[in-house]
Length: 299
Ligand SMILES: [Cu+2]
Image (cartoon, rainbow, N blue to C red; front, side, top):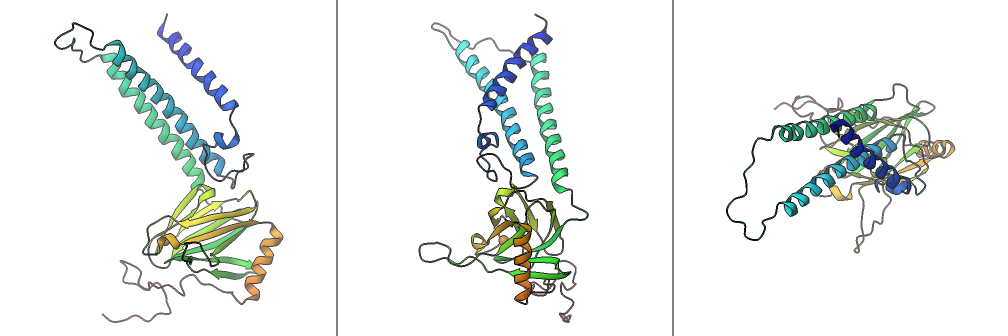
């Protein structure tokens, strides 16, 4: 049989088997048991399907490679085992060019493939909205979060400032966690920044996280697509109470979102908090001050 046709015969059953297995899968299984999907497969943001796809497809490819490799190893170990009466070393084979070329080219294709799909998806994830419906500044601090809704109500900026999680003797959280409100199906752009050390803004069900620095802002653009409450946490070890640096995300209807912003304004939580309360007042490495209100001190 010509080798091309032989390859085709090998690929066909793998494809058929994969399709058959996937056809019988629940949405949870199709999404690789990742968080962020309901049982009927509804995604939390416009990006989670893509992220889950990258994860699951990578696993499928890697498992196919794994099964073939383990199978060949097992076959070689059994077929070429030492038989009764055999002595000395078996025939020593070296420099089988076709095989050497095969196991150089195939991993190369795999690595290039994984890189290409990752780069493609990352480019989509990192593309920022130019004109989002909602602009928010999320500020990490040891060990909680502040959320600033830029120009939210009548062009007035409103904010909420959180405190770190408090626990009782049993370890249950007893205080209200910082909560970020987002309107469903609206384009959201979050500016990520820090007051002190490096934190990482992670909304688990959104399948993405991003570092927060002082002196360099990061951005994250996405559209939340399902109402609900989602857990968030800091994903960058940032000091003693890093594990208490928790928050919630509430994706709500437009009306609820507006009501919430109004409640912040009614509470007098208006204006810009970007760096007014920064604990760290020196921008590292620049000799400059992060806050213009602070007088320069002679050293
Ligand atoms: Cu942190």
